[in-house]
Image (cartoon, rainbow, N blue to C red; front, top):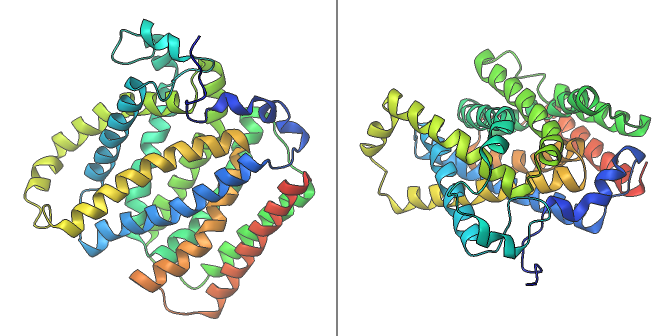
Length: 339
């Protein structure tokens, strides 16, 4: 039998951590690497998306999302064809020989993942809209409330409860978000509404990943593949009917090297983010993934303010950012100590 050691990391590699999820497990080395990788790449992704939408004034968020899905489809198809990855748990390299379908997964499995895929699609679309409609510091500030949505969804979907220390760290994070946004919350109600919708979609998506993956037999790459297969055609038809694809051909910076670099990097980091989000959620938890998002938002706010501006210096904003950072650090300490 051929060795499977060349396969990329999958969700079944961390089965033990899933089984002890309700016992307050400590964060493993793989979990630390997954969390740090997510935070670093997520900061860069927000910067590239913001550059495309504001610096180059590209107005079609649907086209960016569609391009990212096409990129993910190509990468996954090539890796699968080269036998570097599998789509189901426990799948060996020998099993590739019996795969004749171009979709690589059964139709019934694909149907089972439809709710997760549609949540993913809505999350992708509203994320792009939120990034365009608000400055980065306030975007990251409002996004920190996603931890509360995630805790609620984890409780209702899996009955998971957290220690008082974890609840306290989350409370500090939310308090920091409220303090940081106190001076700016009266502006642009539409943009803030979109961010809160993004938070809810993110919470449902993160809380559903492990459940759907385990029930369907799909690993990380299988879930991403199903998302792309289901959402790609929907996004293509939507963009076509709206005329966004035709308008993109007339975009003045379409063939600009700078714009093309931004788009390529956006697609590359989106694929990596989609992979690492599922890995981080599986290795650690949905709440840990949300906390990682809050921790990296501190760096995103600073870099975004320096590159794109949009929010004047304010003592409340600095205080709020500091509280959010301290709350995230407290949560990380709780996870590392298994509290």
